[in-house]
Amino acid sequence: MPPTGLEAVFLANRDKLVRFLTARGAGDAAEDLVQDLWVKVAGRMDGPIANPLAYLYRAADMLMIDRYRSRRQAAVREQDWVDGQGADPPPGTERAVEARQTAEQVAATLASLGERPATVFRRVRVDGIAQRQVAAELGVSISTVESDLRMAAHALAALKERIG
View 1 (cartoon, helix red, strand yellow):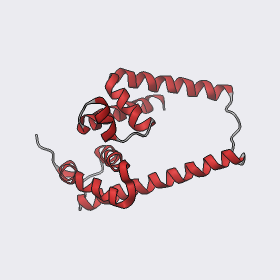
View 2 (cartoon, helix red, strand yellow):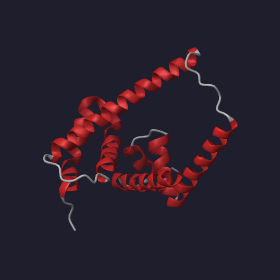
View 3 (cartoon, one colour):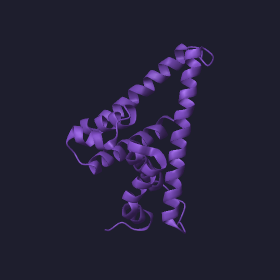
View 4 (cartoon, one colour):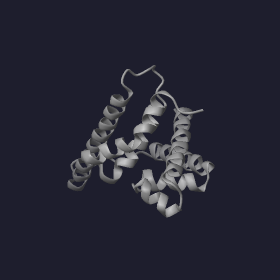
């Protein structure tokens, strides 16, 4: 069954969205942002969109702005930490145990997907390596990397729902 609706518009304009984000300054992160865009809009359940292409471009732009703000805030937090102004007190034992248990659940969830999807997720989302580079490292296509990322995102979203 061929894709329809927003999915069809996304697939037909995927390369244009990557070029748009690259031109807006995303650089190597453009592929990752387009993947994030797809994960975000694929789960959308609130009816038809009057102009799906404009919607996708606006959503892509907002994702890029969010990423820029997040990185800028992280840099400020890092500088505050270095200066000793923004250092949080060490977490309590209870919080540390809870965080360790959550990390173990995430690791188990990723491991249950298989070695390649877990590796792809860690390399792209944790290490910050571009999807294209991860695909080359593993000897798979970009679409395989994107499929593995989608699988991991869905599994982790389900885990998040279970643990609250």
